[in-house]
Image 1: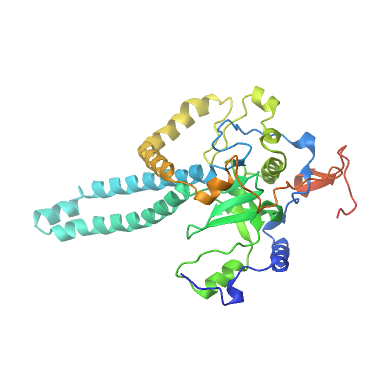
Image 2: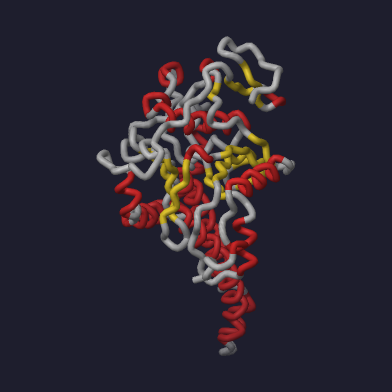
Length: 361
């Protein structure tokens, strides 16, 4: 592993350096600074639709998303479907005239070489993406520890990374990705991490940017800027007030719009005849053609084997010793709020919803 203790350029920056990194992000055209966690969304604009009944994922001590399990599983289905299609093409090609003639003449090498090379190329290509997304599907998500006011992550070397929630700087990063066009980024000062066999230049470049925690919980979180604001408020409210503050809206529950947050696409409420009798059966057919049940079994089995490090479980326990942490929740202001403002992004308002045009410190 890389030894970085003796070189200050290979260490995380200090708080002043972190603020410079944040200012650099504000200057980037693909980053939009979001309200800090001392500002709450204006209450009439808050409408959550997440089913929080799974107490292993959502409780008053901690919560964690299941987003990348679903998102990466979709890519696994696609890779498997493409593999089966390529394999079918190769098998179909074995019945071609050129293959038959080569076999008849005893030239088995020329008969099977083109198909084998074609298959091996796509097997290596699809296998790379399949394995990369498989690791993403079974990897540990961030865990938002409310009682300790910490966000837990697990580093590449298996080390526990504890990020102080009060240090977070939220941004939206625009640009198409697997998460959507609007990506909620929660930036923190870098903790000290363990690196494998990488160059010093890689470490310097890595520490030159703030530490990023993905803020998505649901497949719809990256669809719009508004969705980013909603999810940020969801996390902020939980860390300040607990589980009771992020319960789903009663109005949305009555109309059946409440669902468990995940990376899988949410089912359409009140589907039309095309979606019900054409779209859904076709997607289900593709799922089976991609051996989706086998992939789900494999991913579920591997996920069940994962255990959080003992340190994380200890800090998330009901009787945890949190004396080394500042467990005071970050309180939001009661005189200034924000709300979605269409093409203008968001605007600041007072408690009655009247826009605030003066600068707010």
